[in-house]
Length: 106
Image 1 (spheres, rainbow, N blue to C red):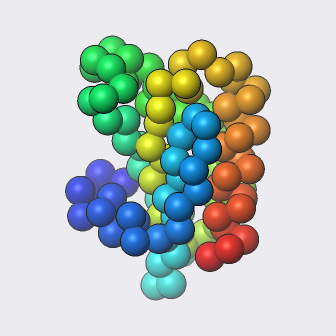
Image 2: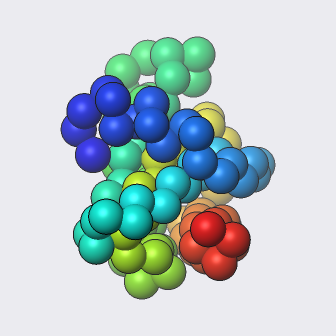
Image 3: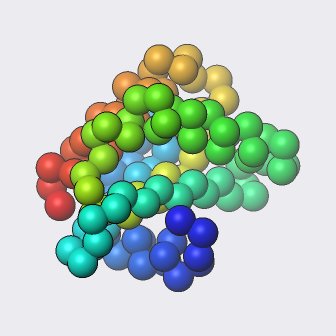
């Protein structure tokens, strides 16, 4: 996702909070494609830190959690600073679990 309006629309959906990130999910009945957006606020750190968090989350989605995402849903993942210190296996497992729970509830 690239447009701010899409990110704001996803905020109306389900929320699943975790120690590493927040996942917001919204079903779009008219769509068949899954869309994912990533957000890291300035409270987390400077641009270098925020980009590292975003890159780790993108890679976890690409390698592991994309299979768990339901078609026709938008997902926004809001990263926290703990993403940097968490082992990558834990990050992948947590992301997959949160996304899967969202897909089953929607």
